[in-house]
Length: 240
Image 1 (tube, rainbow, N blue to C red):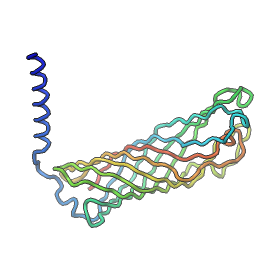
Image 2 (image 1 turned 120 degrees about the vertical axis):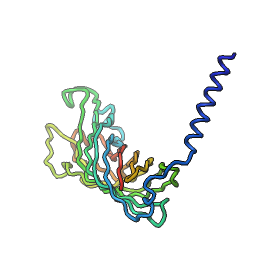
Image 3 (image 1 turned 180 degrees about the vertical axis):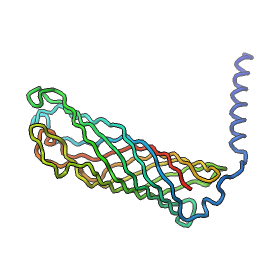
Image 4 (image 1 turned 90 degrees about the vertical axis):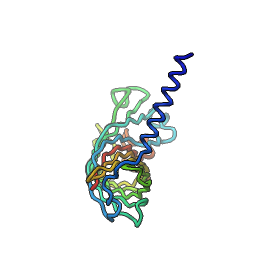
């Protein structure tokens, strides 16, 4: 009984000490940060991208496709950051033009081997994108040297690696996706203020709003009705 009581008291002591420490006022770094209209920096991050896939109705009966599995793959992004205050430290406008690498895999499961020489077939789609996201940032008030924020906006994406105009190889077909895409975005992050700069960690979700599939009548494209880009990204952001 005494041992149980001691454990409970220890837990309460640790929690009380943590709350007391977290509420204690600390010296505020970079006090003049919110007085500036514009802030500049850079972003470095990783992403995981795939598709939202809509198959053609009766793809099994028409094309012999049992299923199309969507597999996400890792990638990365890098670019500058420009943030503009909209007259209040709570609401800001953020532009982060980034260059990103992405890869997605569509795995086809056919009825038999007569379609591809193998019951399963992986189709890899790679992209090298210039992304131009424009986001509204809603930030909390600073608590000592910490703040949190939410993001809402949209993005235009230009795929430099798109094979939109490439000649199709019908003996070894590949998925064609459009070069231009529009995506809605939501996200959030936390910020830490150092002496001369601000460091942030951000998680963001992007969902394409336009069908990027080019339907060219090949074995790999006919079973698919629509494809929409989908990306999760985690970024480290440095601003001065």
